[in-house]
Length: 319
Image 1: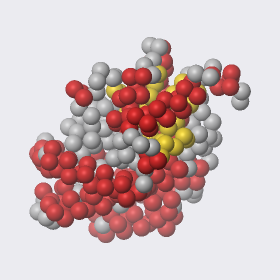
Image 2 (image 1 turned 90 degrees about the horizontal axis):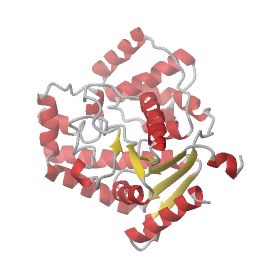
Image 3 (image 1 turned 45 degrees about the vertical axis):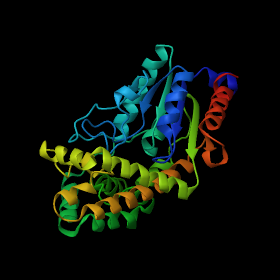
């Protein structure tokens, strides 16, 4: 495709990276410089009342930048990649029509990539009896046993799903049963062509430094009242089995509130699970095409990194 043909497509700017790498701070400066509206690419920030555990940027700290797909669902409502894709397509059109730059910022790899490359989510259908059977298996044998079933038929998908993400584990097993093909194979078969004039930037840093930032963020979440936030959700009749409650920061705190472990153990598990999640995120992003990596460790400071990012965007959108 020629540069002229690419330029005729709607522009889409994307910033990805593992949790705690610093996407939020960069996104605000980028949005101000490029007249952008931010679309959250985080599968958990859609949920109301889940602020601390999702590291949601408070309204008063958004510096006047419009943010979309935040606080649009109740915690007991499901939210899927297909729903994210549909909403994003509409938002990109609306933002572009306003003369602004659509800017997706987030770390949920499948969600973001599904928009960048216009994934086709097949109507696989469902098998309610099989789904109920799997749900019962998880209750009787435990989430790890269910996750092991998925690992045997689709290790790639199992690798990116936490065992406690029972709904998505069940869906992956259901897809395999109905189609005979692993979900990961279907994703690999997607055509990686974009309907957008696309600029994707990925933030990364040395692993030990990233893990240190992860732990610092969790310590801050605890100081900000994460335990009280989870307790309030449970008291408001949100089930601990709800999809949203399987997110990091929630599924680890619930056992503490149930008296099943100490707070120290819950925090240890949260830090461990978040480190593992960051590793899975990086693995996903490394397989994305067209991604321009910015290695933060190799730069002196925030402004140096920001200058590199502006150069990447200018090279894509201003040539």
